[in-house]
Length: 203
Image (cartoon, rainbow, N blue to C red; front, side, top):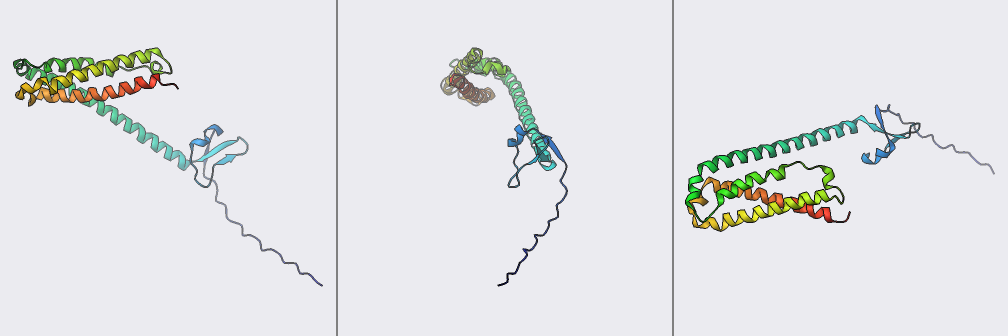
């Protein structure tokens, strides 16, 4: 009985394209990159992950877009605050006599106090002040929460209770500015209270 030997066909050799240029990053940072189904390429000598230039350019674009968006938001916020202060001063001067004619409300005074006290919210706070268990951060945001809540309560009384007796004042520009300050203080109150509560939560 004779046996025949059958040779297995050779698998075709696929052409391997040259590797694109790479940059080397430490192994500890390889979880920060997404490679899909191909998986990361590791340099056997340096034990480092090789990142293609495509991923580098994508990361650079994301960083640029994020930084630009943050700058636009900061500039818009600063511009809005400056405009609010400018119009507040203008309407405080224009509507002073109208507010004095309404003896049942102190809306004019409340707008001035809100303009002055809002600088407390604009004061830059050191990041270490809101660190874990830091008493300074708790004191700062506790005081800011009390100030903002007090101004929200006062402006609510002036806008929706004391000004009812003066229809002309409700149609004035100072009433509109007071509404804008009320919304701004309400937002600041929510933020400060949330930060203050988070400082007391166990980490």
